[in-house]
Image 1 (spheres, rainbow, N blue to C red):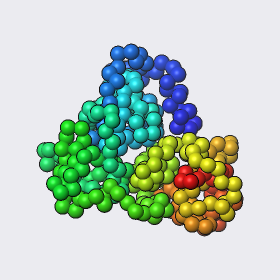
Image 2 (tube, rainbow, N blue to C red):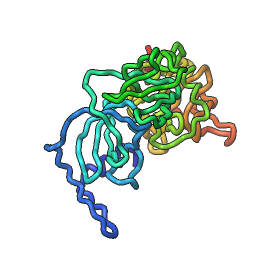
Image 3 (cartoon, rainbow, N blue to C red):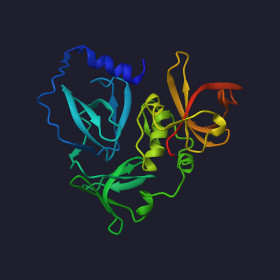
Image 4 (tube, rainbow, N blue to C red):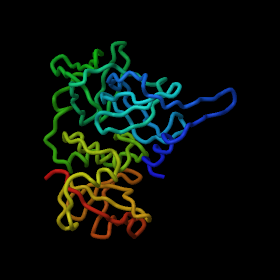
Amino acid sequence: MQRRDLFAFYNSIPIWFCGTNFSIIVNFETNNLNMENFICENVFVPLRSGPSHKSEMLSQVLFGEKYYPVDKAGNWMKIETKFDSYQGWIDMDHLQHTSMEEGSSGNVLNRSLVCYKKDKTKLVLEAGCEIFNPDFSKKEFYIGNSLYTTNKEFSEYFVSTNDSVADSAMKFINSPYIWGGRLPSGIDCSGFTQLVYKIQGYSIPRDSWQQAETGINIDFIDQAEPGDLVFFDNDRGKISHVGMILSRGLVIHASGRVRIDSIDHQGIFKPEIAGYSHKLRTIRRILS
């Protein structure tokens, strides 16, 4: 079952979670929800397929990303993110959030940033997180009404880049693979390509099958350019993996870790198995 299929299952029926001294009725009434915009103040919050810690992590809401509530079930809230319109469930116990104005926009970090909350506790933000109203001279930024201070290294280079898309991708080589991850400390294949384009200032969808409908089609692998996205299907013919062209004959992708492999018209060739690991389906150019 793909991420979207599993999420649709949870939303199509009433759900009971039962155990010793424990039961929850999931109520999908939305009329009384406050449609206020919020912004994430954790490094990340898991976005799950259902209102339970046992549910699959579909994605993550990153520090500085906005969202709004869609539904509520007990101590869980179903939300939709502003950045990629992705829906899932978050546990309100470990969520820190601040109300945020609709029109404000964040600056995307292209590297890790050590920062400090008002109580002097430390956070280590990662590439892909967003900050607001940075003051590089004062070494501080805001999230909603919350002020964060940083170290003396903080400068405009943390939120701007002259790197190409391919060069940005190379910075995350060897990042470990985690299903549903969107950060360099743990990332999946479509989270990786989304992160690289986010740093470059472009918003693309979350899942590989959605990304495969973005941009323009490239007919042949020999016509692919650095930054083009390459998609691969499974035995059922569904898009199940995505990577990015680095140069002619080379692809960077998250498979076990972010790695570089050879690619041709058949797909990705992995030397450790002396064969093809992913079958090429289509090529899309995001930047025309």
